[in-house]
Image 1 (spheres, rainbow, N blue to C red):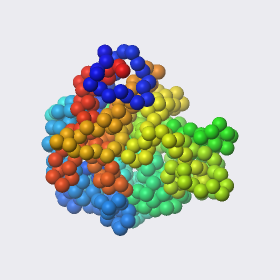
Image 2: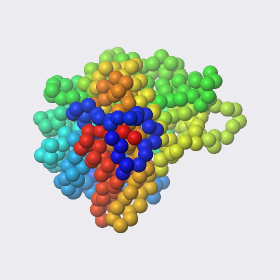
Image 3: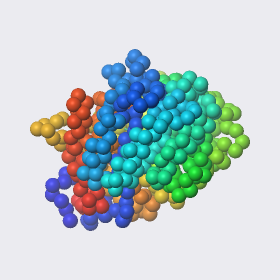
Image 4: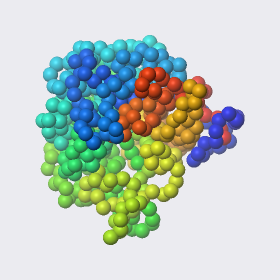
Length: 477
Ligand code: FCB
């Protein structure tokens, strides 16, 4: 049945019938602690690398910080009510490490844990499944001062912190993901320096990536031992990487970036090994001497699910001698050993982040992980878009964001049709929030946040998503 009130979708992948999702499909929305909570110095919380970074001149647009953010820490019950009104089946949030374990070592902070206990109880009380992410980028500052993720010890600290959270919330949280997007933590945090802690050292980024995965493996083992019934996974941000032309040189550029962006994490976590071509590409950066016996066995401790965050595609080309990098997509310093690869823009529609809109890339990504790596259930743990929003008569008509969700949900449905065991989808984000180095200048929310008044306004996309959830699917075109 067609629904004339819906705008046409872009990137249509399936036509003719209603697109119904499998029974029990987990419809959700996601946020992260530092992006929404605020209350940065309350309840015993201490500084994370993002507090330090955002308070350092020149690091974020406008000097924006997460000090107040969406004030979710104080408005949590209202925010959960809003989730219930939208009919969310699940809510993916992250726990702030420096809130529950100030300083990143030692005893738990009861007041910090209590906030998450109340959040989880509130969710369960509204029939919303809590989905807990242990690490969404807010490393306690003292751990960075002691070496950060490039230092091996941080992995052990992460496992200890995981145990504290498991002890406090393990009786009421079923779904756990350890890390959110370790590629960003490692390569934006320690490689390009665009994210906290802002270091620019390719070798440190590679070590950070390894120790993040080691922390993940140790955390899975700790959770498994104390909560055998929990569903455990990790969230990776994955990209299809396409060569700009069919030349052998561009194919090689694509192989290199695919190794750094995707296989760097997929292979150790799901196969227990690093790709040999990655190790060869990184030969001038590191000898992988930081990898100890048994690390890869720990890193590949069996999981119950894999979370995938999908936003866009990378199109890359081989370096051209003497050519200026004006068509380059981004500062390349987050690609150790492959800094000269060119990121090419294709001139297709982009979001307010300048990320190309590419719904078929979601099908490719899901199919690839299923085909090449695992039969485990997959979840899209983030997908969404920033666009400029305008409030008119108290309403936000975000047709472009709605179309983005629509096209990507059609892609998700197509992937299921192709045999991918996709079990859920989390929109990024529930509400506008602190978009890292971009501060409050980029809006990804289905719910608009007026940062002066903290008033929340569900956008057209939120009302549309509520209807998708209600009918467990989309109308055909
Ligand atoms: C992802 C992050 C999330 C948000 C979106 C836009 O990389 O996990 O916190 O910033 O991008």
